[in-house]
Length: 255
Ligand code: 13P
Image (cartoon, rainbow, N blue to C red; front, side):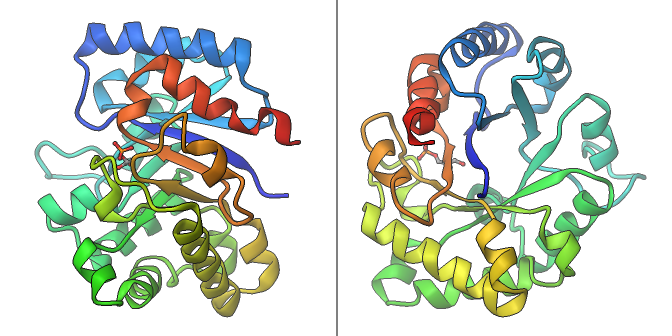
């Protein structure tokens, strides 16, 4: 069966010392409380990756929150896939709605980021999601299909099998409004169907699809009980070690 994954996206929070304190709490709690069958990932700011790599003890794996689409070169201020790998991270979030919205990242650009991440051995956590307006005008399936087709489906099967998908409805991010388990399940099943259509059912069944958007210890159990929801990408609640660990524990008694 596909992997159960709980990933924390810290976004632009915590200075160096605050980050060290939070991460060491997370390492302790996760080691003591979370079944090893649940993959726990922390996507921290770049400045933390190296130290966290030394502290993670092999239990928690690390992600960057972005990468540049070129291998290297004159791109002042940017960070390459190779640089991220060199400090011990295994994953990179690509296409988060905040990057699409505030940094004008298009599906075309994201396709390039996905391609270089895979080519150089980092696993993309590829985010897709519709806005409130798109859902209200009943265009949510169409938007998700377009994000998948333009951002991911250029990959050949062996490449696509490296990808983790995160469905994060924009209207649920940081708003306290969660998609209902039914709404999330409906979209996750749709995404899996799209994957099956382009690759095959076996590939679709093996792809981990995470839910993100106001996930917390209260709503995670019901969300993660849905058949096509394989875990979560957690924003605000990942900044509290107790809450994040409680979310990561949801799969403990579910085999
Ligand atoms: P919140 O959990 O704060 O809504 O953020 C979700 C998110 O954007 C994770 O990437």
